[in-house]
Image (cartoon, rainbow, N blue to C red; front, side, top):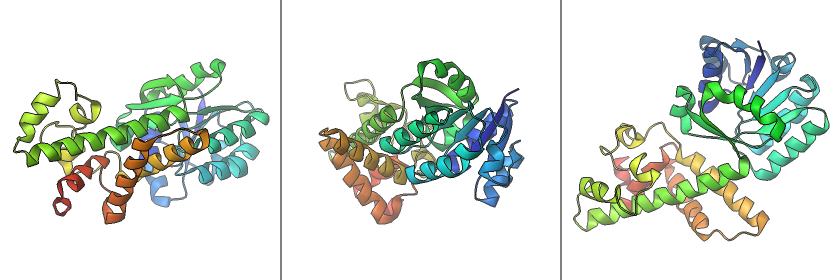
Length: 292
């Protein structure tokens, strides 16, 4: 049986490590938070005293860390010097493209296999084992990467960090469009239920409308029905939009809608609502932030 190390047990990593352990895998987990380690222990993981200790005997190392600086440091300082050469290293963090490339080149030069595998789906999907992974790796490694991620996934797609950044920019833009349309419909006297009924089967139909509707009461599973708690935090959407704008600048791409989405989510976060689900931006559009 393969041995796993899981580094980073935050909102996303905790559920992911728990699902991996529930599948019967041997998982050594580490996080700098003592509370996170206790949750991992309760979920069936073996708790390590450090990243170095967690990775020493691992066949597969999975990381889920906050930002590029953390990923670069942990791989350089803790994983590369201590993991077994030839082991499979999988980073599931959402970070800038350049950091992902730097880490990949660095560890591959040392004899490791590496996959860049950011996720889509949010905290509920992490806990439910229904994340979508967008994997960037060597073609010959994909089968092993897919097998390692399967206990945490509904889909494992051969893509990578660039695909995640582009996808989440599109998601942020589309949610703003849906929220703006609901706000306008309300001002025009069109009931939200009626607008949803029409738009969900018309040319405006999209995932942000029919699967993650920002108006409460229309899609039972949407965070809008839970006071916009859980789901995908607005602060994380802003982070991804910033990554998209950074990548666009580096590539010489023009992304005016992405830039506007970043500005609107920056405003929403600066007003103190970064801890709400990103669909709560509807209330900014409606001028109803007091309802949050």
